[in-house]
Length: 303
Image (cartoon, rainbow, N blue to C red; front, side, top):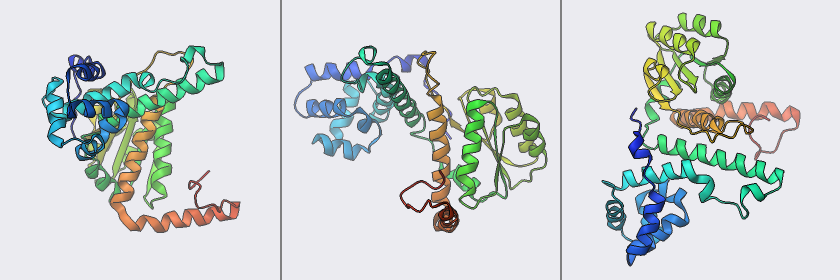
């Protein structure tokens, strides 16, 4: 997996301002492309190049030319900065009809929490755009045992949630949030086992110890954490957890949405790797809920 993290100079590029400038200086197809990108930057940051070109009514080479006109080596870098702009300034690009401060209290709460969640997911989308989840999913799908570690409020929540997602696929998975149990359980693993460690800071001592112990006995270790952290270095592979706090002391951290997206990505990649064999355990779980009168097939599995 690519562990590269953009440096500070890359993070300061304001691609939205550059695009707005091209509206004044560009012409023809380029203007149509810029208008399309600014109208839906989320789509432009993540959709295939062919779809972006089709929506704007331009050719794919036009996108490459625009990227270079904006000062980027190619379309990949342009899209990286577009996703970065969404992550940092998504609240402004999705501005409500009235300024947040002018809304009633309930409106402020809804707007700020929702925009923070959008920003967290945008940043995770950017960070994971070039990450190949398939090797991790394959290791998890064929593991004899899966142990998931997380200490503290957010990371322990993620560990338990991943257990909740994986057991229903028919996998042998256990989450440990107690530091002593993390270390002890890691010490009795076999080489066919997999451990997954969560830590927002990448400095949770018990999770780092458990990952190190598990690898000592031949288990495979994946970590979901901040790049370039001690835990990132301790694992075999990293799913980079990238987020930016907004400084609002009254609002719970939006980083939890980044964690939850990582959990869902791991779970879905694993389910797709296992294929149709997951349908029977999922059916059994759904059937077991019928006794609680939860019979609507459109509801999630589990309340």
